[in-house]
Image (cartoon, rainbow, N blue to C red; front, side, top):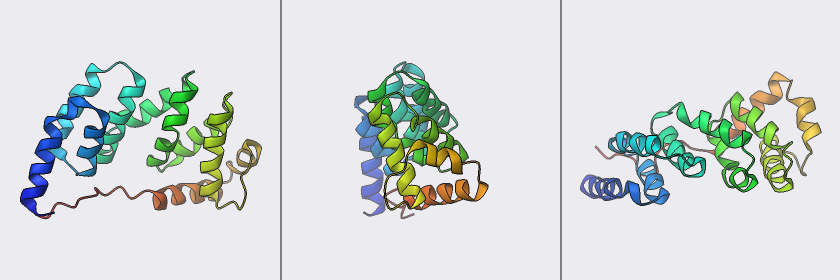
Length: 168
């Protein structure tokens, strides 16, 4: 995509940010820094955690906004298992010690689907050949090397660069 096409794509997506989370995600994937103020406005106006999380995720991708880790913590503490299942993978975007702790908390959730999702991610990050249970990870997560391994795997899992590089 050339510079003119990228600029046009960003402007079109930015003009539609209020019309759905797919536009917000699109702005993040396009690396549209000019969309950040509008995303903050949308975030401030939104009260529903499920609607705030995609905005926070996009802001994290664009500017490492501290609002995203706060939203993830609220999600983990919520009583909504569907919300937790839907956003469990988002925790990996943090790719730091906070993410390890959030995944461990989700791995002990009262909902089996939430537990399974978190344990699946932890097992994959740990390089386990078969799924492990929460006790396995709790026993190892006091080991700094193991935690570092998980964080490193999260960083390798997710490339934080925009899908479209700015050609200018």
